[in-house]
Image 1 (cartoon, helix red, strand yellow):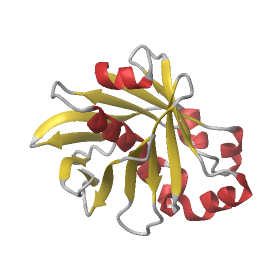
Image 2 (cartoon, rainbow, N blue to C red):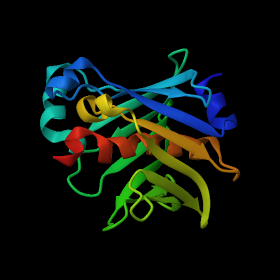
Image 3 (cartoon, rainbow, N blue to C red):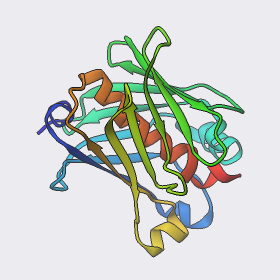
Length: 206
């Protein structure tokens, strides 16, 4: 099953971050993820494109504030869509594009004290969905469209070694029964990656 087919037909996706041994000595390497169906079969990938020594330095010193691109691929290594993160100090933003460059929508961070809040926007800036962590449930992110819960993103425990030393995170994306377009499901999948980069990457707390 390809990533596009899974986005259309699967009720649950699993995202597994792939970390390297350099994480053990404090280096932030390029972010890479495996995307799996609910049986655990790898159906796609997501990888940061910022390479080389300059990219390494930017990751170490700017963390989640840096500008970067993430490319999503199916299991045949065919590009499915692209996300771009512009340089920002406050209220982070992630913009999503089709593989042909068509602007699909964006995730925009909003102010929140006890909850982590985001709007998911259409290409013309209209709020399509809202996402926020539950009160004192910092690892759970339900998404609402017209006040109806349409999906939930959950960070899952990765094991003591990975959580403590390698900063490798696992996420579960659960789609509800509401009808969602391919573009909306792509935005939700991108949201799971954005949550990791914004709140769970080691440099996100610096």
